[in-house]
Image 1 (tube, helix red, strand yellow):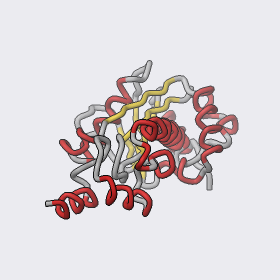
Image 2: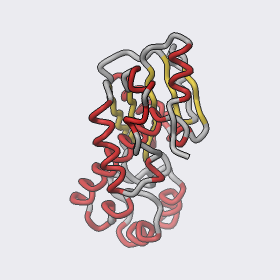
Image 3: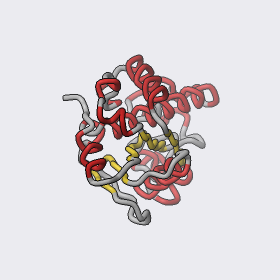
Length: 210
């Protein structure tokens, strides 16, 4: 089933006027940043969400459909914020803390202050705002799905650019995820500046070279 505005409408009924959906992309990758996005849709659009048909969990869409959904979000959203945390900070803070940092940065990029948040599983414990974490939220909430599209498309574009700087790793194809191709390139060339050196495959590589 496609995500709906059920959770957004419940929050509106409780008196919250500006609702932001948040999600991230790249949390499990071996290389590249973790990217979070925050998306706010106008309240009247949440009441007639058929306008947003086609926006879905980014994992359920082809690359072309993601680009189309991204364009749709850009067209209809009243606010979009993006937070990008690079690999060296992921290594310094850990992936959960880095993901939360990316989400906080995304919220700071919004042109309006949200009154409540819908998040995919995580919460932001230092933020004093009503928050509703939803397991598999990108498949349930349209605002979270929209954020997942923005985060995924943004990150994919960053990894395509990274491929030009580090062509031997095949970043344009696997986007930094742990594929067999990526493992072969790591074995042949070692890690580059985009790799997360605290992640298990990179630690194993360092141990082999010790």
